[in-house]
Length: 248
Image 1 (spheres, rainbow, N blue to C red):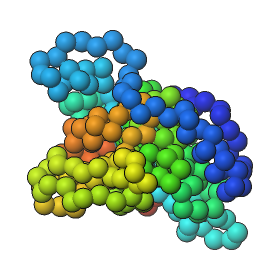
Image 2: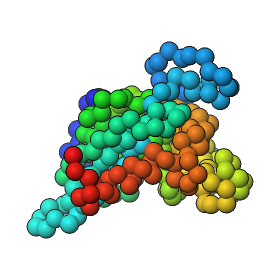
Image 3: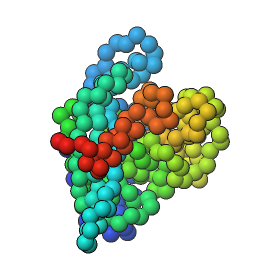
Image 4: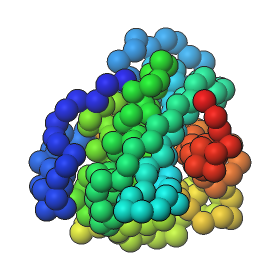
């Protein structure tokens, strides 16, 4: 998968904010999950996502163990699964030096160069990518999941462990319950209870997906844990690479 070159990466934080403001107009918050031709399925739920054949989870870890003047490195990993079976098809990783400083709200400029390099190695292209990051639930409505989706023109979903902005009511205790995440009078995401009785995760559209579908898809790739399987296993993958337990 090759990303579109819509901007430079060697930018200042001020320039990065301007890029976010410019590119957020490209974000699609309606379902365009795949370009594949759909086939008939047995259930209404399956029919809704019948064009999706593969999904992926993506995450990034950081390694600051190197000495000298190095700013550290970003280690990105992506794992592709069949959908809805959730059987692993392929995984890839890449590392890049950290060139952009840590600035809240601008994490995509720090993480995406490595993540795009990992995704470029994939032979099996996913229809939907789940990111361990925010999507539309972002101060400028352009979190990492939005940024990645626009660059790839691919459906993306943000599945964050914690809330960045916004307020919400407590969702029901049962798995699958969710409450709207609101900011400045706008629904920007959802607090989704992925497992009965545990605290919710924060799901928001990235690109080419509606909020309702983002929440439903997040539940569809859960396997009994709080964190959806794709992002949970991508997190484990990059940590293994970081510790040197994965050799390729």
